[in-house]
Length: 201
Image 1 (cartoon, helix red, strand yellow):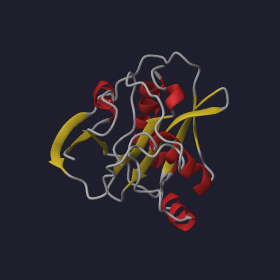
Image 2 (cartoon, one colour):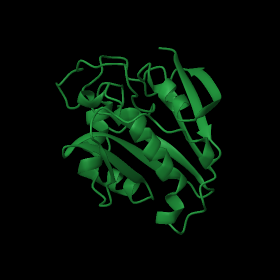
Image 3 (tube, helix red, strand yellow):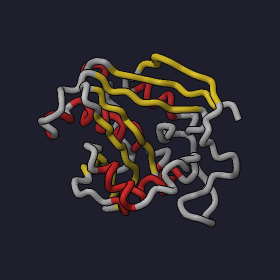
């Protein structure tokens, strides 16, 4: 399976463009308590329909180590229910990767993705204010691929991200069967492509 991967970036906080207000009332909150269980839920609930399989074998300890490494998780809620999340991964040089981003299926097509990406990117730019041992953010970047929603690339560009590289490859960990769904046996769910979906894992 040939997969095209696009790499996008912002190099100034002023690059960030605001999204239209979503149709739903949304609160976007940082998950401040390290919780492998919650992070695994978000990853499978969002990524189960999009070939996010690389973390399925992770142990509880692997999740704990990942989250303890400075990762920030910001979660969009509607009426107390998770609608999507963005995961920020800083490095030691002032770059912050949007490592994962996406919506649960019920929230797709309601404008939540644009707002979540806007807020998540803003939090990447001010991450050093919450982690004072970090250098100030000088770059925010992500990658997406042709396995993601067709709307994903357009959403990133609409928020001010620019493509700086693209590659055609066959990832070694590409799962070639049907998408696994959010848990074993669930299978793929009906989904819309009218809103943003996750960054390619």
